[in-house]
Length: 140
Image (cartoon, rainbow, N blue to C red; front, side, top):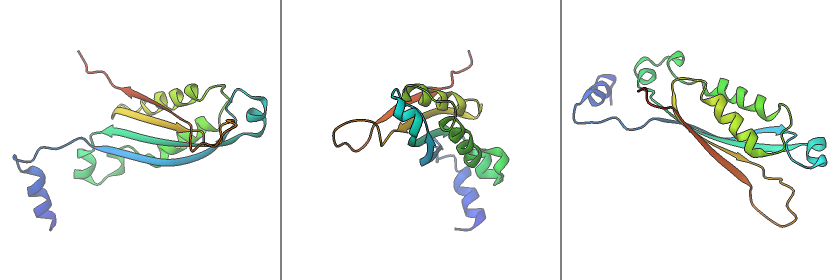
C-alpha cells in the first residue's frame, strides 16, 4: 500500500476510527514495598503493565513524537515510583502510578497492573497482582 492509498483509507467516510491504545508490558524495577521488615530491607522486583487509552490520530498523521505519549519517558516516571519511598501496600503503589500516568491530559483512561511475583506467601503461586483504573471525566 502506498502512502496515498493509506491516506485514502484513513479519510474514507465509511471507515470509523476505533479506540487507540498504547500498551507497555512487563516493565521491571526493584523496590522496597511491603508490610514485613525483610521486604523493606531486602527489596524485590516488581513488574508493571500499563494500558493507555489515548487518541493518537495526530501522531499517526504527523509521525511526530511530540504529538503522542512518550512511553519511554512514562516508563521512567513509573520506575521512579517503584524505586521511591517504601509503601506498606502495593495497592498504594499501583494508585500512585495510575495518578502519575493521568497527569498527561492526552490520556483518557488507564489500566495499571502491578505484579509482586515474589510476595511472601508460603505456598507455590504464579503471581500476585493488583489492578486499578483511572478515567478522565467528560467536561460538563
